[in-house]
Length: 447
Ligand SMILES: Cc1cc2nc3c(=O)[nH]c(=O)nc-3n(C[C@H](O)[C@H](O)[C@H](O)COP(=O)(O)OP(=O)(O)OC[C@H]3O[C@@H](n4cnc5c(N)ncnc54)[C@H](O)[C@@H]3O)c2cc1C
Image (spheres, rainbow, N blue to C red):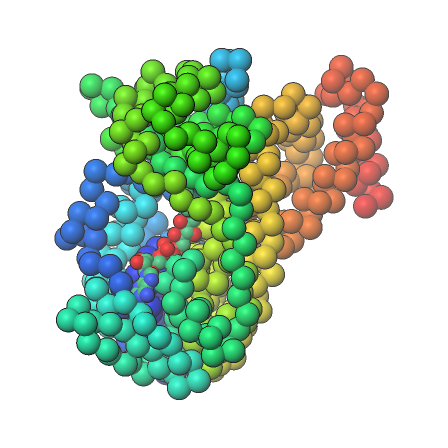
């Protein structure tokens, strides 16, 4: 068991606030510095309900520090995907086995709750409106600009940078030659829109599903909120023929939505208002290495921001906290511990970055493709009959704690098997036959 240390956490977002609780429970003195004002007092999130999908990895990390029940009280289970096809039909695909769900949670609500819980620890000190301006890992020092504009230098035994995808600490470390970093921007961006609740507060679409309008090169998704509304996100190219740049008038926006999302438009009372009020934002993947220098470590989006298509960015950041928590039990030397966390998490961060990009193709393109749906049916049938032999990739990532890089490798093996199965003559007519089952079993034996 290590002695109590003085620690700094830069960034009280989702990961920083949870991480502080992990550290405080081990008896360490934690000073959190957050750039923004206290969102609980400023109503930063008021009026806009932005939500996220929380799944098993995040739940495990929240459970470990006893906060999961408070979070799930406000969460809405989503048991599957409701697919809104271009021809106006709707299909439903369960995410996993009966009862398995991912949970729609409010980003602001969850962040505020974690900050509230952190504030309850007497060995955590919260400092809002303190923006990190520099970090000097080799001196165990980090600097902040205070609300009055002064420069505050803080020395600490261990420094955690959880200041998000645009991390100032990461940039400072890069400038000092302590790491290499690259942000890969993708060609798609996103914009948030909404469907308001019924007059009586009821939901205007199926509540317990994640809704997707897959349109090959772009897609719209919707997640439910406890007040009966849905938050929608349009993922679309930034530039080009069908893009945010091309939708440059109200007429074009309405024409696009009426053409592509005809069943959603009558529910989107504030379509044009949302369109103008909410920015279209870029999406990128952060690749960084090393994450550690001296006793400073980057965690969460600061070290591994990913695209949101697997709903795993926050979940993997929470898993960082869980892994650190496990390692705190075993390793008392902090230099060794930070290295161990980095070595364990880096391959998993790279794997979930790859998986998230692959899932974009699956969500926007394949969820509406009959051959893909048939493949999923075959996999589901086989997995039901042989649960010890087949766990679908989505379940490995979302409903298991298998390391991401192992899940990715297994997923690739399963893809190769399913490619052979789907190439069987007339597969659509005998997909549920013993022959297909025997084929998968024999391919599994040979792999
Ligand atoms: C459209 C979209 C949808 C998403 N959906 C999901 C989902 O469904 N499921 C999921 O798991 N993930 C999702 N994510 C990813 C998720 O939002 C992030 O992975 C998660 O927020 C990372 O948490 P974090 O604490 O590392 O960073 P952040 O949440 O960005 O928090 C960083 C904190 O640091 C503060 N900060 C920044 N700079 C400074 C500074 N200089 N000094 C001090 N403080 C600073 C910020 O104010 C903020 O409070 C989504 C992301 C996007 C963009």
